[in-house]
Image 1: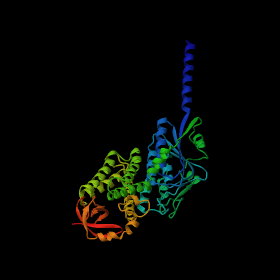
Image 2 (image 1 turned 30 degrees about the vertical axis):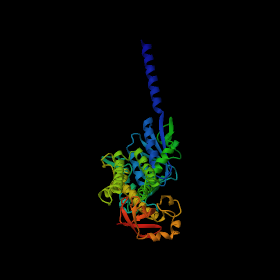
Image 3 (image 1 turned 90 degrees about the vertical axis):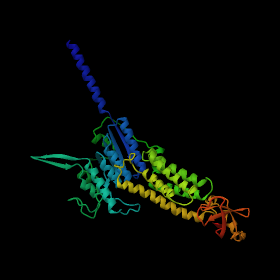
Image 4 (image 1 turned 135 degrees about the vertical axis):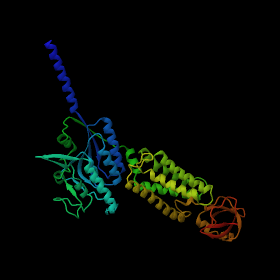
Length: 458
């Protein structure tokens, strides 16, 4: 009986030992952010966190080295870090400036390499000039709330209980605004940037290490661990590239330009194909990323339909055309916002502003391009095949066209305002001076300019 009890105790001890050994083996998931903070790096982090959570990782370690980047992407990244169920740590390998500082402060613990820096989070434009105060105000609030999210430490001193921020929000704010004063640390007129030793002293670094392995073994205490690193795919890079605000504006330019030049030419051709391809490239990555929803794309399509109806059905530009433009712009803008169905509570005013700016820049540049190309079409070059008229040099060499002034004929095609007219059995390129002219309408040639005849309705 005693022998049996002894064997059961040995078996229980063995099982307990095996379980404890199993628990010592840790999975650490590493995500490298060693580039500008943009939509591509946001995709790296999002996919990496999803894979780490799916694998049951014990910790996520971000290996970061960046001078900053897009604030909108950084905001999305810091939110994902703060609310990730698996603790996220960061190892700063040389630089965590601007947007990189915001992302690092969101992590549970910050580890830095000797000689690394963190800070300088002022919002600047493409030329490095500080943006207006409304942008700085938003960044100050964002970085302050990120520091506050880590809470306070409770300190007992005799009979007194003190609460101290784990990461002082005022220090985080001083990284953005040179007007913020932190006693014994920084005066006004300077934006705060920490070295590794300074960050350690002021609570913005939890340890200094030279490699991620040292962070894991020395500070996280994982001696028996497996390190798995996220490997970006070509699709991640392509998706991030297509979601670049600059490229999105260019795609909008192509969409608007394609629609306009398709209106100037009979039938469907290159302009409509270019507009369709640009629309697909614009919406596809946003849809796959969960930003563009079905109803938002439908709004854009309705806008296109209304514009087409205005062009082909209703002669004068009116309600349908104006509504079409509003729907088109709304569809392009809404697809850039991170709303859920018709709920916009989680969408900040900055996100709305950035989305609107991206679309408006594309629209304005699109109209500028239309005006410029309208003067170029017909000359020798890449756009000559889009034009309705014959080669200008050939047309100028035919002085007989001036003799057509005053003659009457019919609209051979719809003129909106360009098209074809038939005079004395011959078809010529024509432009309407009377607005929209239906096919078959009686017209009269009033002048000849730039190798084209200009007509009016009789």
